[in-house]
Image (tube, rainbow, N blue to C red; front, side, top):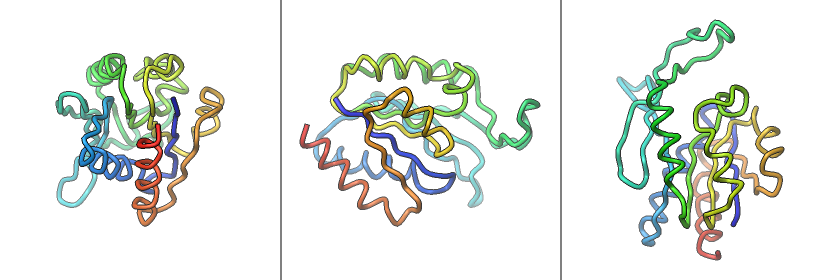
Length: 176
């Protein structure tokens, strides 16, 4: 089993890398389980974040853009739907055993508040997968490495790196 931590700053292409990887492994007949969180785009702007259950294709709106919603941290931009967080956690819990586990993404809720998709920590520790692709923001990488010290870190700095990172991940998945 191997954990790959995909990290980078906001807008660097982390979720786009996951989308590219999913496209490529699906072409090869490899099924991934877990959650993928693409943006909701309206009039050319990101207004929300969906979560997709990779096993069923069910898609739910996870977050809406609402700057300053959190009185503890007014810089937070994305207000999460608590019901979708519970649903997503259940999806993750039921995503193993699997060959490729995707968790897009583990964030401040999980690392700092111990809420959200916290079952991911136990599942990643138990290792009932061959490869786990886990997205974490650069600011949380140190905490992620404290939990998953043997993980391979892939930093994406801009979308131009997506193709190379996708090829690397596909090769790793095929090798295991």
